[in-house]
Image (cartoon, rainbow, N blue to C red; front, side):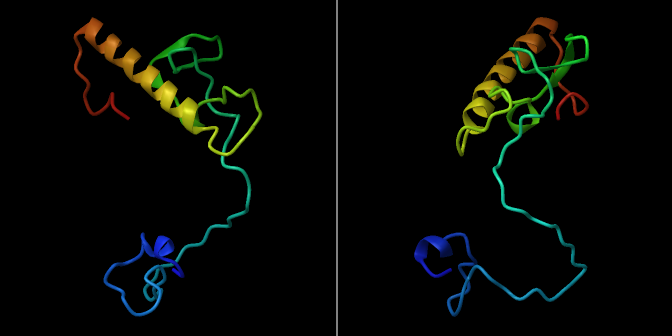
Length: 117
């Protein structure tokens, strides 16, 4: 909270002190160990060119798509740079959306709560 940029996401009602830090007064409290590292994975779900998750035999699982860090990396196990998840996530999200919309249109089915993740 030492600069206007750092205070941007803080509590705007706090004008005296750091708006990004507040007392922690009421439990229950939980903790998680956080370690520094790269944000990314290469071991996600295997997909086809339509971002459909495929089974062990390589057959698409109807209605199941994976993109972003849930999808096995298109980088083949490499993490060449920060942000490398963003492009494939947006691209395959778009591809999955188009494919799902085409599948829905061709069957005439409308999605229900069980079909939408």
